[in-house]
Image 1 (tube, rainbow, N blue to C red):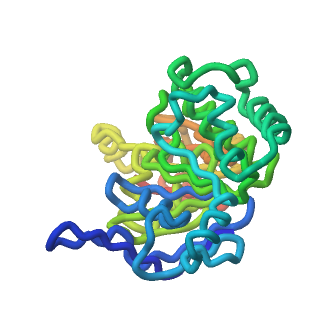
Image 2 (image 1 turned 30 degrees about the horizontal axis):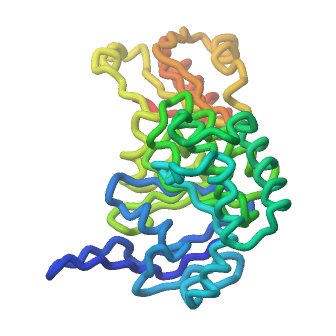
Amino acid sequence: MIRIHNLTKVFTDGLREVRALDNVNLEVKQGEIFGIIGLSGAGKSTLVRCINMLERPQEGTVLVDGTNITALGKRDLRIARQRIGMIFQHFNLLSSRTVFGNVAFPLEITGVPKAEIKARVLELLELVGLEDKAHSYPAQLSGGQKQRVGIARALANRPQVLLCDEATSALDPETTTAVLELLQDINRKMGLTILLITHEMLVIQQICDRVAVIENGQIVECGPVLDVFTAPKTAQARRLVRGVIEIDIPQELLERHSNGHSTLLKISFIGTSAGKPIMADLMQRFPVVVNILFGRIDHIKDTPFGTLVVELSGGDQALEDAKVYLAQQDLQVEVL
């Protein structure tokens, strides 16, 4: 749906040049929720603004559903943008218009008849759960409600792609979850391709199918969210996922098995293996004692991911047999 090839954007400030994007290549598939994650200043927002040509790159091409957006003139670009919805961190609502008026605005610009506008706006307000706020003004809404208006407005012209630029950064955690669930529901019902820019790993974890890590204007890692979270290949990705699924083991725990008759393991369970009684089976099969020191289960989108830190005690051969057994159970096993 979106293909980005050799995209470069340079900003100039007097004698100084800032390379915001440096030869970026990326592909977003039809119907997926794709996340782009990076620290502030990494180039995320510049990238998303180049996709709809709010910023024009110096080099490279952006194709949306086969159309080369970078090659379009002003008139054709205005038409192409109708197929690309966008929601913003700070909502960008018109304070003098009601909720109904804000959602209707892009339809009015494109000359849609009033009767069709009314039907479409009411349909969208029902979709985002704001039917009762049609005549309210933005100042009367909460942050989450404002973002729902922004989502409805972005969907007004039935776009093929929805761009989200830090859409949840100004929201509290509970409201963020509600907005993300709404985006996921829209993706399922409409088959809409969503490109989501964020610096929050929990946002990527909750709804994205794939993710790209951007740093200093370059894509340094890209792949399924589960792969990037559980087995990051680059230092940049490892730094971002730290604290989401990684755990720091206290030094006193690392010193507990120094007697040679115990071993400390970090065991990662992914997918269906997270629900299996593997520790119970382990104790039944081998003469070892299992002391669970830490454990938790997270979800990466719809896939469960569990982490256990356990101390195994027993004879040398029993410990070796137990480690071999765990490795055979489709687990990631790390000796600490």
